[in-house]
Length: 271
Image (cartoon, rainbow, N blue to C red; front, side, top):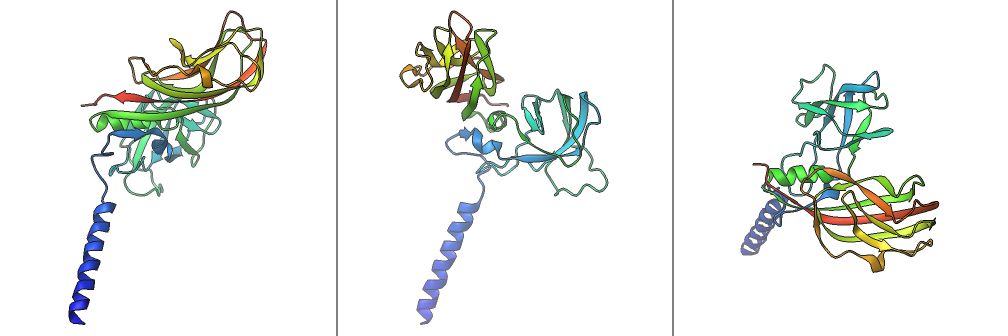
């Protein structure tokens, strides 16, 4: 019996040791150096002190940070490259200053990021309002990848159903992707039949058909399954740019398109 108990204890100790090791965060981040942007979109913050007027204003904001998988330290999402979603608007800060002193009565957990954020506001936002990622975690993932020696950021972006503008060949969506990437796929569908234009394509500025090549079938239900663009690289910066729907020869008289696009962005080390 004594020998049996010793074996059981030894087994339990080994199991506990293995569990402790598996639960230990990897401070070097993902071992394969692929950073998934969706994991970086799972942060929220709050306004500590809001703006009383529209236009260029500075507010005090707080977040505990982004903790994607195997990252020990939180990633600060507040940066002049990263859009933030507020109630009723999405904007990119013009200035960020972190490490601010905690106001009296502010009861957020210790640690985290307390920052003054300056931006041009279209709306007034009050204390306690929740804020979150304005780009589905793309720039947050790029920041973390750069700080960890570089790597690939994998991202997916969805435009939703977008009604085409009738005043020009190009409809600019509010959906953002990095300007530099390898395109690896797209899914798009005509939701409302496109009239008067000769064709449609899905891309970004400077590469208007990088996702879906020119498609001459304009009727509702048409997809870009047969118009997939071969993998290619585009861009030279890690800023964000909008997904575009581009028509051919003449402005559309009507029409709507929905697209989902995805790719990899190679991120260079920050230091």
